[in-house]
Image (cartoon, rainbow, N blue to C red; front, side, top):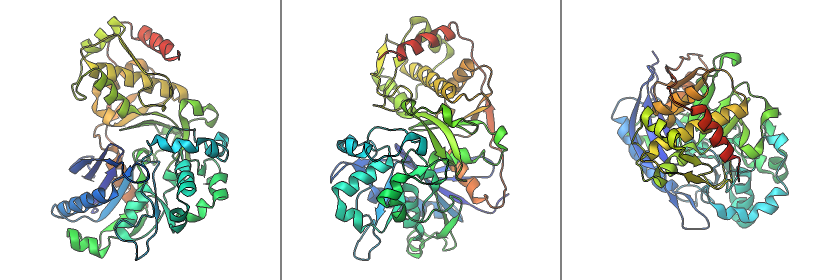
Length: 464
C-alpha cells in the first residue's frame, strides 16, 4: 500500500470538488460547490476569488482528517490565466479575468480569427462555438485588452494557475494544449503555427509532465490550513486526461475506449485513426499525459441530459426502469439534438422533443446512450469500452449502450471518481505502481424494436 495521501481539487465546468482517493479504489468526498460565473467586467469570467477562499477552507478541513502528502488539481479545458506576479498586483495575480468559454460575445472576432487559425490537419482541433477554442480567447484578449495582455508575464492553463497559487511554481501541462485549443500541432508534438506566429508559445510557462512534483505547498498556505510544509503539489492535469491516464499503463492494443463524462462526454479511442476525424462532427485529437495524440469524439453529455430533464419537467435524479424505456420506444417519443447550442456530432441542429413522456429521465438516458453509440461509431471504436464519471452512475444508460453495441464489452467504473483516481495514479507514475481500476460489466437489456427506434432517431437527426 502507498504511504502517500493525495488531495484532489477537481474544478469542473459545473461543479468543484475536493476529495481524497484511496488505493483500494474508493474516494472520500470532502466538499463540493457550484462553479459560478461572474458577469461583471469586460466579459463573463470564473469567480477565482470565491474558488480560492473555498479551496483554503477545504484544505483546512482536509488537514484535520490526517496527513496530506500531495495535492493535484484537475480542471476542465478551454481556460487559461494571464498571470502578472508583480508585487504591486494584489490578490489573484491576474492581469485579466479567466474567461468563461461559453461566452458568445467573443464571436465578434470570428472573421478575424478564422483568417489566422491553423487548418484542422495541423492541430486536429475543430472550430467550436463561443470560446471553446482557447486560441480565440487569447486572440480576443490581445486585440481588445492589449496593455493587460502585454503585462502578463506568463500564460498558464487553468489547472496550472491553481497549482501556481498553491506552490508558487509556474508550468504548462501539454494535455490542456491538446484539448481543441488550436495551439498544438497534435502529430508533430509541438506548438502550432498560430501559437508561434502570435508569440504565445514564448508566453506560456514551461511544459512540465502532469505527474511532476512541481513544488512544496506555500508556507503561508500551510500556516492558514494546518497542512504540513512537506506537502507537494503536482503540475496538475486536464480532467478527461486524468481519467484516461489510468489505462495508459496497459499495452496500447489492450487499452479500452474511455468515455469520460461530466458536463462533457468525451470518447477517447487509443487506437483511433486520425483520417476518420471530422471537425464538423466535433471530433478531435486530445493529447494524453505522455504527449501522445488520442482520437476523440464528444458532446455536451451532462449539460444535454439536464436540459432534456428540465424540458420534460423531470428531476435529473429520478431514475428509470426497462419498462420506462420501452414505453418511450413504443410511443416513438424522441429527444433530437442539439441541446448544447452548437457542440457534438449534430452541433447546430435545432433541438426538438417529439411526443411526450412522463419520465424525462428515461428519455434523457435513452438519448445519451444513442449519442454515445454515434460517437463510438464515428471513431470506429470496436474493442472494450469503459464509462467513467457521472454517466457511470446511470446503470440503465450503460446497459442501453451494451444493448446498442452487443459485440463490444461495455463496462463502467465501479467508483464514479475516475478523475480523482486518475490523479492518484499520477503520484505513482515514476514508480510504475499502477493498479487496474475496478470495473462492472454492463449487460444489455431486452427491449422490443430498439434497433428500429435507433434507425428512426438517426433519420430524424439527419434532418436540419
